[in-house]
Amino acid sequence: MAAEFKTAQPVEYYKQFLKEEVRPDGRELGEIRSTILNVGSISTAHGSALVKLGNTTVVCGIKGEFASPTVEEPKKGYLVPNVDLPPLCSAQFKPGPPSIQAQVTSQLVADTLLSSNLLNYEDLCIKEGNMVWVLYCDMMCLDYDGNIIDACLIALLAALRNVRLPVVTIDEDTGLAELSSTEDRSLNIVNQFAATTFSVFDDSILLVDPTVEEEDLATGLMTVIVTQDGRLCNIHKPGGTPLSTDQIQDCIGRAQTRAKEICSLIDDTLDSIER
Amino acid sequence: MAGLELLSDEGFRLDGRRPSELRKIRLRLGVFDQADGSAYIEQGNTKALATVYGPHEVLGGKGKPLHDKVIINCQYSMATFSTNERKNRPQGDRKSTEMSLHLQRTFEATIQTHLYPRSQIDIFVQILQADGGNYCACVNAATLAIINAGIPMKDYVCACSSGYVNNTPLTDVSYLEESQGGPVVTVAMLPKSEQIALFKMDNRLHVDHLEQVLEVASKGCKDMYAVMNAAVKEHVSRMAKSMECS
Image (cartoon, rainbow over all chains, first blue to last red; front, side, top):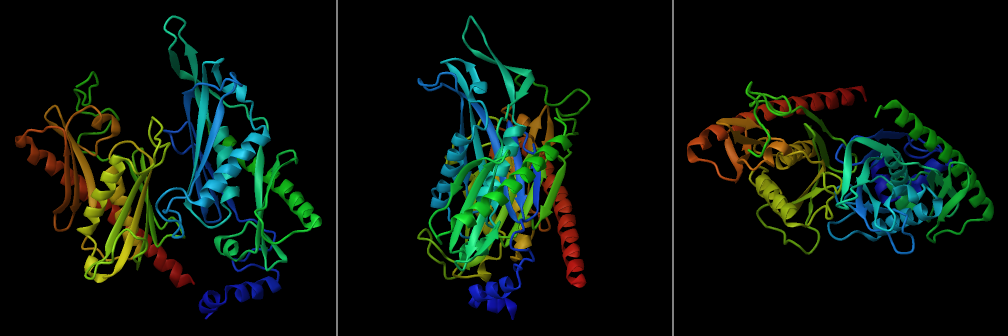
């Protein structure tokens, strides 16, 4: 009976639950699904991480390549993030070119990387004006159950901290780069960040970490990205229900707590493996 | 062979296996919630993921519904970070398209297509890490995903590759072994009836040796079947137990 009611009148179905301050999956309104992190499982990548946020699963693999730096910034390497939502992860995505949602998420991740001072890009320099590392960060969703941005950023950060780049020396005579097979180094991550997504239900109720059903029913979505030390990095609110300043302040507060949790989760996971 | 001794004098391979030994297999059914069926398989360092959607109504302008059988749509894709050199395109290049087509043919031969006329089944396979035997891992993962989705098949399809080095056939070749330029035979087989659904060969191999190599590959398929069948049985009994509890 419940299943038919849910299909026929999803909004009413949710309202019945939310009246009791609980969500259909048993969570409280402000509760985040359990987050599971696995690091370094893909050995062909320079760094990798797999995140499960409830049922949402994202894998991030990072591969480094050589590239020429730009003329304006001859010492700086760069990161190229890409979010992929393949048809494999949900029936709502069709085969073909990247969907709008995937492109928007990629762009959001790129903007966040740019504004967050995540790492010192001069670390990626091999030879000034000649050769730098470019890190391709490919995030792929394997199971889509809402809140892809949070999951992608956790995977990205964990994978970046897992990166091991071989030490490169440039042969003076030939000018060719040589990779050391024994020595490698990790990246120096200066500024970590994490995202928290909120969905607005029925123009009034704020839900944290929405599932795919809650995203579909939402009248508005908002993602707040803050750094580990609590500074605001990015807010993404693509239209939808207008929110008051107080509500946004509240969301930022909750995002700050969440960012600390995420960073300590990543620390713990990296500590638990030996590399 | 180019400098590398694929088979030592003592008869061991580069990774320490015997010629007829499969790599370590780890597999799981029902890994994801969104898909109708899903499975994950690790064969050595090759990691593949398969999800199945359907049978559902025919969507998109690509294919017309067939009045007598189901359309099987396969997509093979390799993660950009799955190989040593970064791949620019996860799918859509010639190799992936060929692989998608091979998978489609393999499963058209095995799924009971006549049961779902005017519908479509989508099989998506994703290679997360490639270390040789990609096709085999995909077929095995897709078989498990189809079983997980509850779609009737004539039999399991199990795939295994084999190579031929120093007059010795090798089972389940790794990337290092298959990239040395020796012959590689890939077989997808219905283990009970011993029928071959797909047979593919790269490089030259003398006809006299073919039987021997084929024998080894089909033995590999049967070994694979034993492992997969055990996993399916375990999965089903776990499901039954959890249903009893609730």
